Image (cartoon, rainbow, N blue to C red):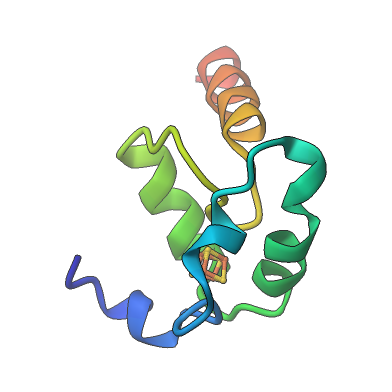
Length: 76
Ligand code: SF4
């Protein structure tokens, strides 16, 4: 939890519930914040490396991260 990129996270101080939407349809608010975030790449790579299941990370839902994992496996 001490990664330096977190210090620059656009979601700092924002209600965490926003980043744990109950459905993909409700993810838009979080994704809009990620769109403006300077550490989006680091955040996404962290989530992919740690297989984060829940929540929005680096502008992606869990479903979208699964897709990225599949694509990377294919191109590896
Ligand atoms: S990309 Fe999104 S979830 Fe990740 S640190 Fe930035 S605002 Fe937070």
